Amino acid sequence: MESARDLLVSLARRYAFADLGALASDVVEDAGDIEAVCEFGQRLLSLDAEDFAAEARAVPNDLRRRARACTMPQTPREQPRGALESLRPAYGLLLETIAVRWHRRELSPMVAAIHIASEYLPLLAFEPLLGNAGDPARWPQGLSAEGSRFGVIGDRECDHTKSEQSAVNRTLRVAGEPAEGWRAYFDRQHSQVAGALATCVAGCRTPCTAMDWVAPERREDLATRARVALTFADTPLVRLRHAAPVGHGFGVPSPEEVLEAWQRSRAILSKNEVGDEATREDGFPLPGLPSLFSAVAAAPVPPSTLLTDITTHLVKLLRR
Image (cartoon, rainbow, N blue to C red):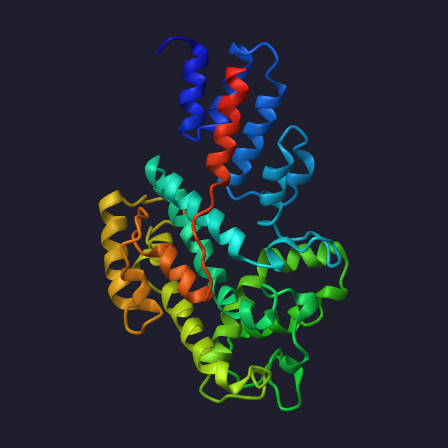
């Protein structure tokens, strides 16, 4: 190690954004831009990405634009729509985050990222048919067609749980609520809507007309992809998030336990051609995970390079 600045470069290359941001001013005379980029990178790595892109003026426009594509709009009418336009950029970031956490052996936040991915995966399946990623302002009218039980609270023939019925009822009207209600809905209920949609098309025992807007020739494919999304949410890998006896954040799994859980999950998923993509050896730390997400999405979902490109930018700032 030649200098303290070289140490900072090493921290950047390890995605240690918080440590680098804290130490930069001790080594670099004018560290303001470095600190701002580190905060930007850390919030992305932590998946804390509500409004950071608007604040990070020291970050290159391209990085901010790509980050904004991964965020949920904070008001019903906010433009652009970010992750409500397409979830593929957000899933690319999730995959990159999972890989970074794996290489840093930060397995608790890695498992948390996998859990987040499982919650919204059904919306990735629906995206090609919706033309968006489940934007409550743009639900198809067919969801509320005559004979539909979608969002009818208390309907005993509906396979949705009570909490899902409440969430679905809310999603049909939340676009007309103020910003506070909109944000509260996304904090608590949007992921339940994702699961409810998958149940409608792939698991309902008493189907209503809620899915009649899906063309018959596309329904079987959608049902298969949605069913795989539901299955993924109940795999041993995702259940690692809930395995600790005293709650989230305790009982961190070992790398061996994660890989073993993923191997068992791959076997469970491989019952159809969509889920079988999880068995592909695609070079990812959890082999087959990007291939699985791509199969569910019916579109390529590779890991992003956003965190890597932030690191590259930080190295340039440190060496100028």
